[in-house]
Length: 283
Image (cartoon, rainbow, N blue to C red; front, side, top):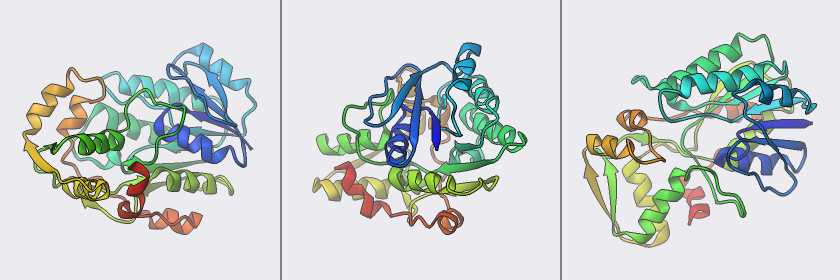
């Protein structure tokens, strides 16, 4: 198939493109961050504008894998809505990479945009599937750097270089990290059959607290570290001036992000590894 992958320069997007190009013709749509991936065709377009939408229609794709998103700020809802407009306007089957933030009890602009995107896709009349990963992670790709630092890479670097790791609040909020290769393989398996018009949560085998994630990384690096628990309000203030953080998401950081992958595993045959197995790719 010819796959049109929006957000092809993102961390998840680039990894998906590299997994997909072995068996498919892959076009990676990007805007500000260049795409340099072997076997993948880059295509620069701004999906928020009419010109970008017209450009997509001429590419002759069979399926859209929609991974582009704006995370930060109050403009997230409008920007993501415009990008979903462009995707739906193609009239093609869509696999949409959403997020487990749709389950959060604390509303955020980013979470609301994900909920809105999912609802519009479900009401579109197209064939579709939604995957909602919890905390994707994986190795760095050679010659490719996403526009925003991947959070696990930043955490590993901090543990590697500092004896003290700052933690937002008590660190007891849970995540269920999913390896990006497992996530990509599951999406590709969904494309082998008619899309089921269903949403799937996607996580690794084990849910664990943020404190436990730090301990696992430290053990893999064989470095002793001390966790310094700091008030959430302090990180919210830092996020106001830091390009890689969003104050609204920091406020909601103590929400659990857990995901039962059993339905997706049963449908695709993909076995999602645990973080204890996958952490080596980060070291």
